[in-house]
Image 1 (cartoon, rainbow, N blue to C red):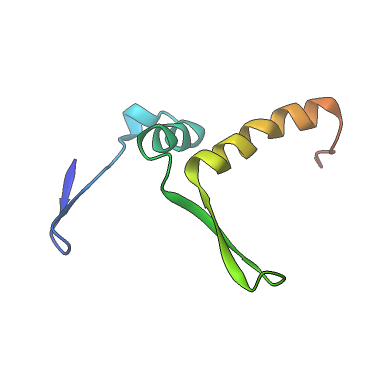
Image 2 (cartoon, one colour):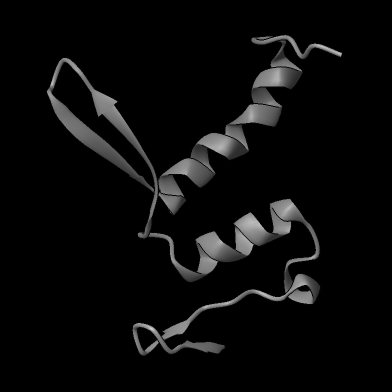
Length: 77
């Protein structure tokens, strides 16, 4: 862990060795902080911001290979 001197809070750093890859980094971050916000999107109908946690985005990302394999979407080469 590193210390963020500006806010005096410990940062939860994930090393390259621990993550191994970008997908590995995402997996580590989900495991460590599943409820942290990962993505926000504005909903014009509700006139409000929707927030998705790392865990929610992780579930969606995990579906992508299955969707591609099932032929539900095509991948451009």
